[in-house]
Amino acid sequence: MAGAAASLAGCATTPVGLTAAPADRWPLLETLLAARAGASGLTVRVRSRGCAAKADFVFRVDRAAGHAVVAFARRRLEICKGAESAADLVFSYDELGLTRADRIVIANPVIPSA
Image 1 (tube, rainbow, N blue to C red):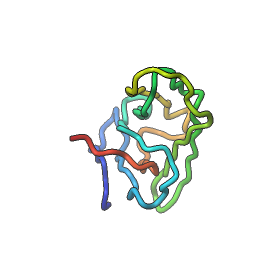
Image 2 (image 1 turned 120 degrees about the horizontal axis):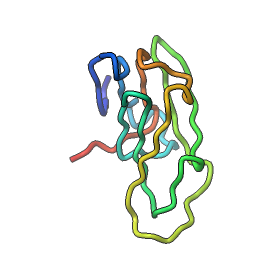
Image 3 (image 1 turned 30 degrees about the vertical axis):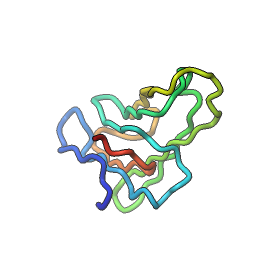
Image 4 (image 1 turned 180 degrees about the vertical axis):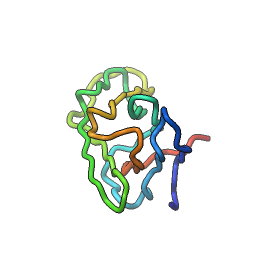
C-alpha cells in the first residue's frame, strides 16, 4: 500500500499487519508521530505539550476488505503550555475490539521517522 508506515510480519505476539493509510485519505485526523503494534495493543505517539492523555482521544474501528481500519481523533484540545514533546498512548486490542490476528490499517497520517 502506497504510503505505508510500517508492516509487521505475523507471529503469536503481534498482529498480522500494521500499515498506515495514504495521508491524503483522511486529512482531518490527528497526525501521529508513530504507531506500533505490540503484544497486547496499539501504541500511538502524538504531539503533546505535557498533558495529553488517553481520555483526550476517541477511536473508531471499521472493517473493510479484510482489514480493521482504526482512526484516532482528539476529543479535547490540549491547553497546557509546556514545551512541545510527544506522548505515547496505549490502546488494548480488547478495548479496540480487535485481536492480534487482525490486519490493521491506521487511518491517521503517520509522520515517517527520519
